[in-house]
Length: 112
Image 1 (cartoon, rainbow, N blue to C red):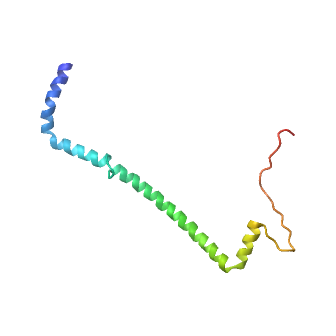
Image 2 (image 1 turned 90 degrees about the vertical axis):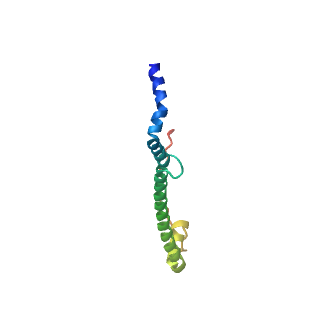
Image 3 (image 1 turned 45 degrees about the vertical axis):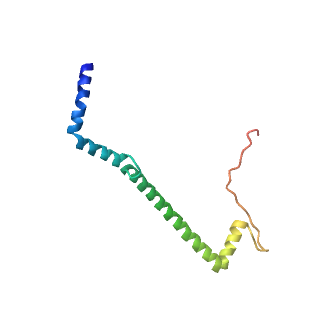
């Protein structure tokens, strides 16, 4: 068994000389495909990240448009200001009563 290994190791330089171009091409493909900043694997990761960030941008742009229309209504429509004051800050006129209904779960006391 040891003789076979020694024989194979003696033939390696001859094989390397014979297939030097093939070895060079295989090593080059491995370097370009899997190692380094510009490898195909890194480009695929970057592409997925870019797609995710574009989706996030679309989401934020949509919320920006909605908020912009709400803000413009606040500047132009006094009824919108009144609605926000009544809903969020529980403001009322003198002749009104406000009843706040909460759907929070009531905590039961286990000791009772």
